[in-house]
Image 1 (tube, helix red, strand yellow):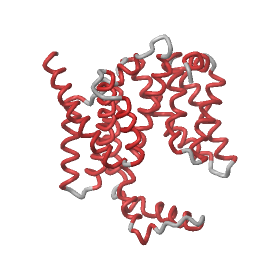
Image 2 (cartoon, rainbow, N blue to C red; image 1 turned 90 degrees about the vertical axis):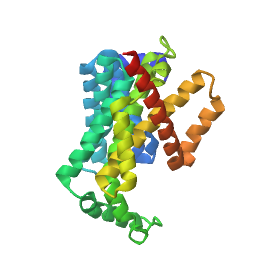
Image 3 (tube, rainbow, N blue to C red; image 1 turned 180 degrees about the vertical axis):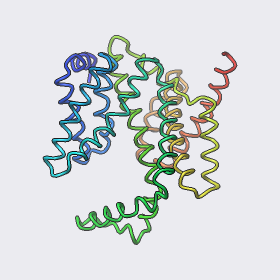
Image 4 (cartoon, rainbow, N blue to C red; image 1 turned 30 degrees about the vertical axis):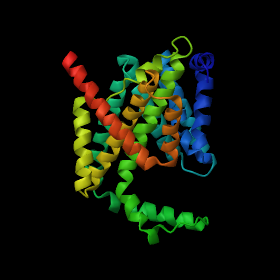
Length: 299
């Protein structure tokens, strides 16, 4: 989407609703990587036209998605919940970005909200394994009925998935919302302010407090088997990974990292995700701590 089309779609709520609805259907056809795309459109409209028009686009697209879910045999509330999940967080972050002008603050608020969400889920719904096990077991049975060669009972994956689902859902929500916001901001700044988004992205950081909380959570997860601690560690790992990617882009912009190496990082995120995420998170932690200390000294 180039800058002219971004301006065109932002000025036309009707087409924006249709585009958002169509993008929201892509994951239903197996394109899981597209989950962040629908939230980027109403976030873009909000950034360029204001909260009222952005909310209008999101509401209209939610109705389209609910009807589409109903047409394929799923209850309308499922479509509305799905719409709230993919459109709500990007809209909230878009509003924060419009008022603050700080991508770093958006990341910090998203991580803090994710941590609060994890704590509340564990406090209000109790043991995640007991809560999720029936749903995961039903999913495993459905996969077997469809002929998929995966025995979750035999591999012991039902308990593992059930125990970690609160964390994964929260991490995915935060990452998708931030990716949608990044895309919306990139669209907004092209072509009149080319390069502005890149400069903003390269300055992402968690700050001293959240950086220290991340270190405590990750170390505690290595010493504990508590699901709550593990879920918080996953969230902070995801956030530090984003900070690490921002540092890599800043190094490339400064000529300290070649484009081939930056491309390799993204390839490894797909082919060797666990190791690459850990390395990027470590880089992100060190970079965040050093820059946060400098910012505190200069304040």
